[in-house]
Image (cartoon, rainbow, N blue to C red):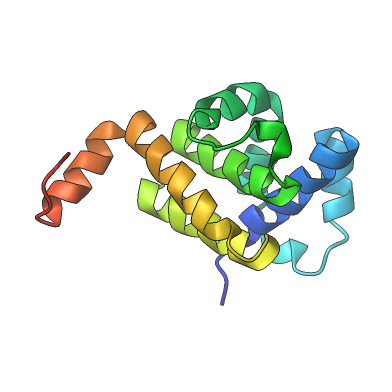
Length: 150
């Protein structure tokens, strides 16, 4: 069974897809999402945090991960871009969620909604972004597994 936070991330992803294509505001998007099956099972506060936070910080978040892309941000599919925006937001602004959880959740969203190998791309970009935004956490995890830190 999916957690309430996972459901919130799914809905945020769908909402960001709508935002990227139609540029509707967050409240209109939330009203639309409220009609979706399973909306009541989502962590509502986390959904609002993600949706409003990503929309407010989209330019900053795009800039944060664009250095790790192999193409311009505008050429990403709306699904991949939405997933990367959510992952980047969580890495930058939600330190209580471990970076590995952020990446795993983003990979699951990309597998569910994105193109065939989009999840691999999302994984690689967010892994590099995590090393930049949360270097101590990444180093500690790698050291804890006995791997040499590069």
